Image (tube, rainbow, N blue to C red):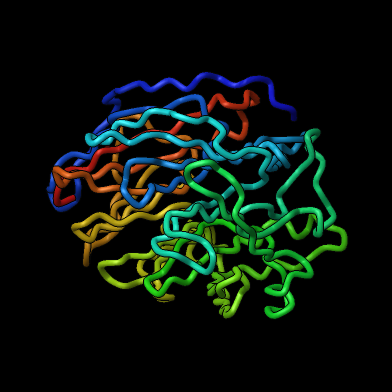
Length: 359
């Protein structure tokens, strides 16, 4: 599938739905829709909160069975400004382009190896990549699987951590990373990335799925100096570091229970049978927010049970959500939406949900 032009992004402020937190903290409201994106998948705020970076994964459906693929070379990163009141405005639709499979993005909270604080770390490549006609890329070495690093101002490439077949990490683990997805930094400066491990059956030769969560540390030249891998059943997807709790969370898009999907905190289940889940975020009040494939958000209050956050209009495959708390104590949650069935690139959007203080 080739690019067929770029829609100029439009920003539309709208209150299309609202919900009340289980704890009675107030309403959650959709306050803005940002259009003109190319199947946005993940997002990350700059350290000062003045910018938002959104990955456009360029997903589409192909063939009679409508399988999903990420078109090689068509993914990109958009840059948006964030006003003090949380309003977004598209500044650079393609700060970085010609990427593949940009399923996750995070911002370095401090200098990491040779990379300065604020650098963009992006999951790229992966075994669900396809060519522009939808044919699976079957050569694992051609996928470019890894973590790419970019300058947040210019978009210039700063480096890359290879995770695919033959890479030092793959050799050390005994297997390559198949589908790098959600990515975050933990409290000790380690890079954490989920391997959803899909697509190995498309490769020649096939590679068995070994889903899990990978943690890396880097040396002064960007080399990997340490690694650990936690196997995770059910295909891990989004990951997040909760600084207040000093805890690593991840969600899965499969697993225990008939619905599949779960939330884990420091490797222990917090909520099972949640349904296929994608992204995770945390409010200052300790509520965990999870996006689900079915088209909604779930709130898990501190010490409470998961509760769907009802809106008048559901989301289109809400993906890797991110949260930013504003000066007035309220927070905004950025919700990228996937429409792989939509054949028009740059025809998708993200929604902004405002949460009141104390939610």
